[in-house]
Amino acid sequence: MCVWPFAARVEDSFQKGLEVRTPLRLEVETGSGDIAISRAGGRVRAEAGSGDISLAEVAGGAEVALGSGDVRLSLPRDSQFNLWAETYSGEIEIAFPLTLSKKVGRRLEGRVGENPTAQIRIKTSSGDISIRPRPLKDGPRRGGPPGATLKGGQN
Image 1: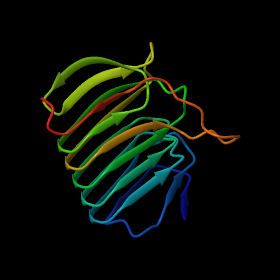
Image 2: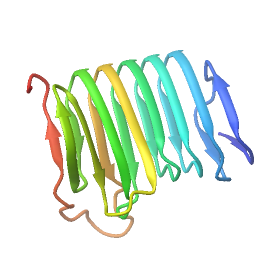
Image 3: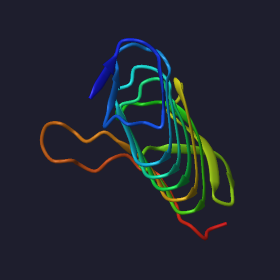
């Protein structure tokens, strides 16, 4: 694990994990390979040609671009955010109460919460997108809030 107390940009990532402790921007790019980021205090931008991208507890929002692979976000249960998500071949699953403002093909836009504080933008050509609340630390997970699933092939 590499810890930086400032904004960082990593290309062709060789680190197994990154942790940022200040509310600054983090950018990660790789041609091929998985990206996993947790506990970033600021906005995160992650881009990969192929591989899976996992973001957990990203406080400042996220921008994700992926050619082939799945995108998974795990956010605090009280998160409020604006969402733009698109996949050409895959499913979009949001386990938060989403107020949908637009759905065109396999792209959707909406918001979670009354006063969104973060922007989340995700695009993958071939893969699934999953946005879920962070698992509870104590005890078994109980049913979460209603969400939405957009399955591939639905228009």
